[in-house]
Length: 146
Image 1 (cartoon, rainbow, N blue to C red):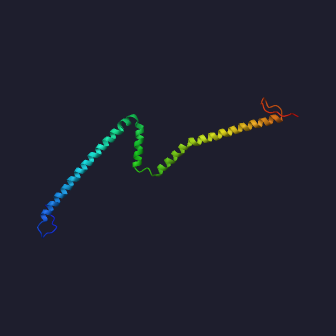
Image 2: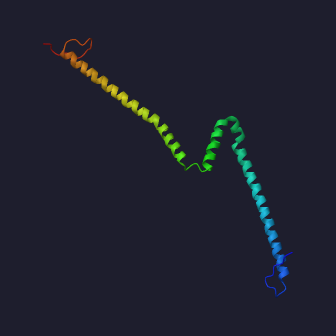
Image 3: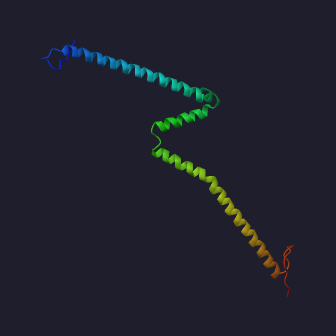
């Protein structure tokens, strides 16, 4: 057994070494019991979380959704959130999300243009009917014929 003497001249080195050994052993025991308590608390928290979230039931009801969720969580935890691939996927998603809005706007513009063409065609047919005879059954203002 090794003894540590802080002062070899006073003869108390052996007692000091035994006290240090006991203090170190007590610290190790305390750390071990604290670690065991932490492990038990963590295990209890995981069990409570599992019971609350009902993961097994969710997987049974929606296996593909849970697989996608697991992929997403793994991707984020794996550091994939701030990569070029994520940027590309987000840009693609934004484009796809904006597509219905753009489509509706273009359809509205096309309908307005078609209404304008119809109104213009009616106006033109009324003008040709007053200038040159019969319009084929359109009822519009007729001017004097010369």
